[in-house]
Image (cartoon, rainbow, N blue to C red; front, side, top):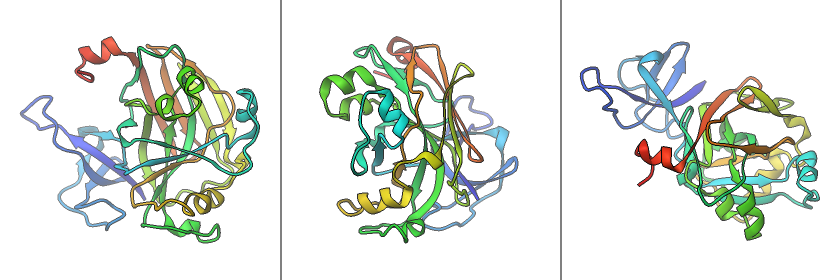
Length: 270
């Protein structure tokens, strides 16, 4: 099952968008849901044509839990060693944007990188999950881009600012509840040129290991996102570039990069 969040344009009020709704995507039709799907799947209202709606980020997380240096070649390309246990950091919910939404390049940064990743959504409130039971707390999987202001990350020594800018966590286009994450290609293209080309088989710490580690010290809530790490090939982007993250069998996530002046012209920044 593919779960989306969408907004629809009122037929006689151009550019007037309703609040986002959850829905189930079947072919070219979207079936609205009465509530978040991990609470319960109850169709509410008539189906919409996919062409008549705009897909937004299929997530409203209380937090984004991310794994750093979870591919050996990525750790090496930045001059880092493989961590002795999963290296965890957080991104705030304000980083989340959806498909085709612009990533805003911060004026205070001189180096912004793409980081294509496989992400998962938590389906139930959980703590102290074992590796063997990890699958039962996962609602589904999606595509993510852990955009990073690399110069600020290095300057600060910790990662909150470099990872935490608004728009720095594109997610989508949907949540797939039946996706098998084993041995899947993870790629990132910039302007249709391949930059990253990895595979989930190369994860240092498995998804089960990551969830067991995280839930030893943190409660995960339904709707929370866990980003599993990025493969080698990260690199800089500039305003005007378009990033496309692909996870084999899961979908493509496309986001353009714009500068702050353009963001203000569009009303995306005060």
